[in-house]
Picture 1 (cartoon, protein in one colour):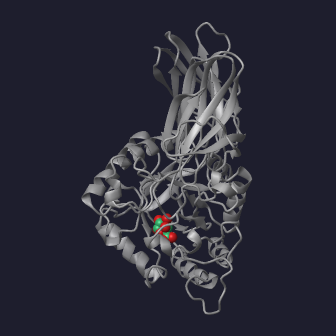
Picture 2 (tube, helix red, strand yellow):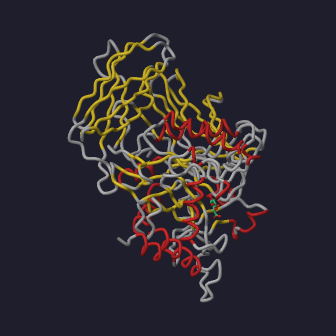
Picture 3 (cartoon, helix red, strand yellow):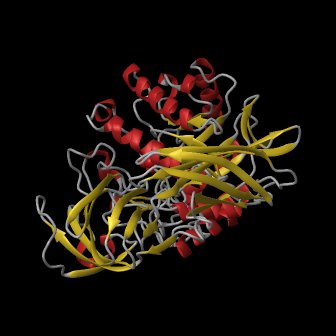
Length: 561
Ligand code: ADA
């Protein structure tokens, strides 16, 4: 299952889920002649006892059956962290970054059975600027769904839905990106349906190899807006017609919601109403599945967060699985989605591939997740070097890139730089990772007031403020009346003091607990040595989702009216 709804009625799509052949590879090795294992896709190899700590390369293989000659489009929702894709032994594409999707179009494939192989690499190597030893784990494998689409020479690649409200009537600007991969010019006509209204995108002639953008602006009277109170969704169906064909040759269906997000008078609004975000930072990590969390366990995660009274999730620290975003669209949960980066120094940001890998991640994140009403803001570069001029230029470039792609959502980044922060002027919302009472003895309420002053003095004046990370270690099962650091009792106390301050303050527009669940981290030296059991234990539930004492405390504060 790639999405929680059917994305196509006309285009034939086959999901390639199930056991694939697998074989570990040495560093320079190409595709193996024999495969000794079978691993589930989606999945990560760490779930196999033999590969629980394996870091390196591995080859996956399956068969793709093509019923009739034509073009195919391979869709990979996530390969961790680098994938090289081969069809019948010929390389047809590659991709870096575990957390963003990519697709490969192969214009002409004969009918019959074809070998699809992927060389996956999760090693920390000189070509990886973002996947580095860190306070989360870079797993190995084809971690998100794979599908093959059987496409005509002209097809709808993607669409962007931009809702708007004027004079109390909802409307939308809709852009559809259509590709011509054929060898002849194509005269195309695009039509659509949304909320009972027919959309006429008009006609366009596309040259071979050209991607054309069809646009329509349409008012849609009588729609119900999307929000957490009533997460009303609508199917936006596009049908592509090609001259000479009575029936549409292709289609694409998206699921959208009518809502606007604004930041005025120091607050965040949805459909003009002020919002207070109460949520969790959530790593995609599970003791039984690693990063490849199956859909039922995603639902379980969300149900636990909703049970605790949360209304929002921060996708720390990378774009999330699209099925989780679909789920949040349906349940009316607000999402802070961010690009892939955590705590990178200016030296790490100088890596020759850093800027391109971030630019690719930003583009893939925004283009593939554009239509999720649950995503109410984009963010970048968690705790990277935003306190030096060189880093500030990279923040500026990335925030500008995202703003060029999407003007409908506010932008932010989570900063731990306190009064040294240089980038608040670049963002629409100021966000702080501060950890009072854990990394220091400051009082949460006083520190929050201080943070407001730092923001006001550094370009953040008048901007909404979010406490984007706060929390404490609480090792599951470590109970002690002494309430020393590391016990569940102390985690409770620290979270309670933070929540008391933030839930009673008019200074902030949101708070995200660090973190929903414990997560596996890279085994390493230096500061990583502080991670007992090579895991970050600040979860309110452990890696198996067993609740700690803090669960009840969070629920008490998040459900308070
Ligand atoms: C940082 C970082 C988190 C986590 C946290 C912690 O704020 O953003 O990913 O590492 O610290 O647990 O210390």
